[in-house]
Amino acid sequence: MRKLLVLLSLLGLLIGIPAFAQSGDACNIEPPAEPVTIEMISWPFAITEFYAAEMEACSEVDNLTINTNLLDSASLREQVALALSGGGDSPYDILHGANGQIADWGAPGWVMPLNDLIEKYWDEYDLGDISQGYWDSASYNGNIYGVPVVGNTLHLVYRIDVFEEHGWEVPDTYDDLLNWCDEVGLGNPDWELIYAMDVSRSRAWELEFFMLLRAMGGDYLDEDNMPAFNSEEGVAAVDLMIETVNRCVGADGVAYGLNVIQVAMGNGGLPLTKIWASRAATMADPERTDLGDVIGYAPAPSVVEGGPRAGSAWLDFYFIPTNTTNDPDLVFQVIMETADAASQQAAAAVGSTTRNSAAEYGGPYLPAANETIGNGIGNYAVNPAVSIAIAKLEQYLPLVWPGDMSAEEALETAAADYITEATAQGYIEG
Image 1 (tube, rainbow, N blue to C red):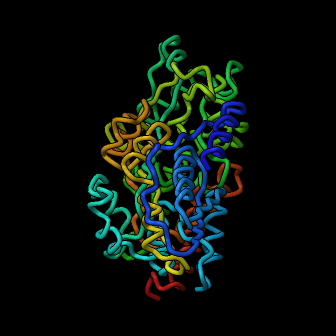
Image 2: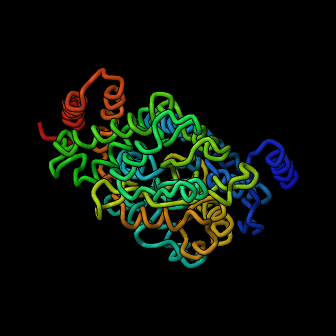
Image 3: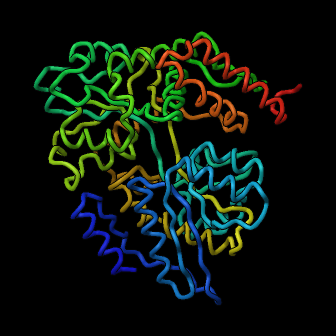
């Protein structure tokens, strides 16, 4: 295992993939009496790749083998749904998910409550080092379903030298951003794009809409689970999203996904982007770019001056499937060893962690991320019905920019479809 990690590190130096050094801590787990293989499924970005290496290090324990399976988040959710919805044995023992999966996987019983295990290992792994608010975010109907391991949000990343050279101020509101884009000029030949935001996939359109809607004071559902996104604020949020694409991103930039945006920032083709903190953490990595010293970070802009930042607050968790075929106590210990204090302190170099003791080890993006989280729009309500709304908005919002639907048509169609499905599933009284 150690030889493999060294080889991967050397390969990373050669091809530009960051090398994920382990924390150096031993995996302090009592060897099981019989051989055990634990399967983990996750989606890859810098810090989750680091955690995957930490987890695999527990294969050094006698009779214990850890396999980590990394695939894109959409495919992961599909795989988990296929694997767990039928009620048979789970092929996975550890699942990586985010805020939405607390209710999506917890409500139908796909993942097990961890309250007893958390209480058992609270002192041994100093789980009070993780803020209570994070544990609250991992909870649904009194049960804690996930172990918080990553904090995340979206904020601005920009070229300090370019902004200083031109006397530009980093946009603090969306009005500032639109005015800045007009000044720089869409299609400016000095840049690949003047501004980038991920709208390359349906989920990205929905997420940007959610952030703008919340920043305008709106939300997805009311207290009766009826749609609230098809409101005046909803239409205004769609209009602002489309205006931002038209004035700042342009037709070519719509195809730019997160990986392409990150590369463009690193190679000097982009002066400003709104991107995940998990990406910003490695954007100045000297193995990726020579521009690390001039890459700066700022909070997500507000829609209204003095209002909340239009950046959502995210957490990533590790879950244990209810139908795991392995001892949940052993599986939980593997998660604990992966995300203990030493591991998170090392992980802070490549991403935002959840332990208070790791905060001082983080990178220069952290103030921007913390300001966005602390004064931002939060996250979706922990409510299984919200996932239906998300799915319907993912279906129709991408049709607005090409002109196939107006903002009003997209929102009203999504609302009608949502009501039909939410009623069928019992979230709305018929």
